[in-house]
Image 1 (cartoon, rainbow, N blue to C red):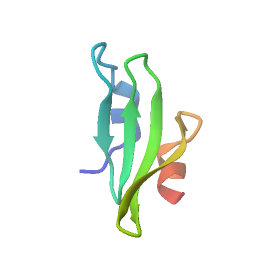
Image 2: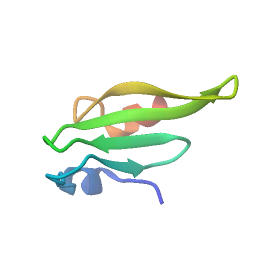
Image 3: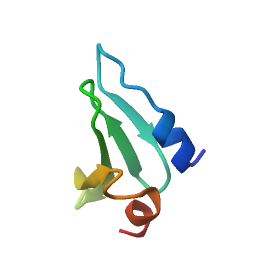
Length: 68
């Protein structure tokens, strides 16, 4: 199920571990223990899994991350 802006704003960091939240088409949100929220795009290139950093929420909105 795709994420929405309200859900993202309401996510609280877990003090014990980092958390991943999936959106769609490989777009994921990494919520660090310290509280940072980072956009990541998971994809494969020539059979290898890769991750592309897209920016930090809220500087990069959900809409912008999906467009990239």
